[in-house]
Image (cartoon, rainbow over all chains, first blue to last red; front, side):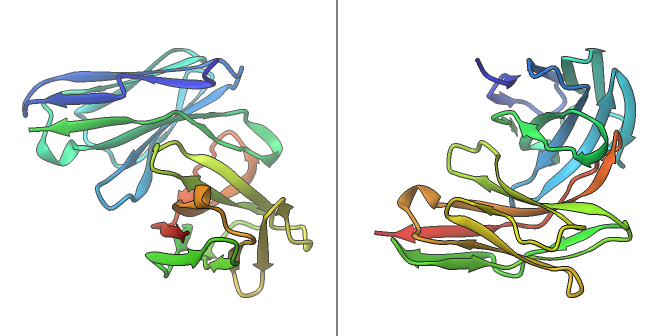
Length: 115
Length: 116
């Protein structure tokens, strides 16, 4: 069973469209994340949810709206897609701890191409 | 704010040889973790090794080991007996010790090619 699964793996769409990427984890973790990897392979955190509560919100345009219906799911909806949104989006999860390492487990990534 | 710097965009090594990937970081945290992640062509991000900053002993995982120099804020990855399957992008990362607000900061990556 895949620990962190994202769908779809590939998404090609036109500028101006709205699209969603879904993520589910079966590890029992309480924290989930969205990271963006640009064309130069740079990975940057976008959002983080802990037990369905938004705890990290980097300077991401309002067109990006994450939603966490429960702690096992974290979806990313993007409105009015722009060319610059083309990237690979990674979902990840971890178990928050008062001490010790929050080790992230990543999904396989969703490659979004905006034409 | 945390920053992670990987100064080697690309490296190449012969199969069975040893290679070292460099990483320097900066953080205001008193305690933190350092990680190396591997991203092969399949795109999957895979944890290679991690190091707790308050532990002086360098972490090892089979053929992978680190050289952690806390004062110099340096965290290099050594791969021994390189294998073709080690060909991947390697990312160094720094994260906080504990807490729910884990914001893992990644370096720009080093593309390692293992040559037969």
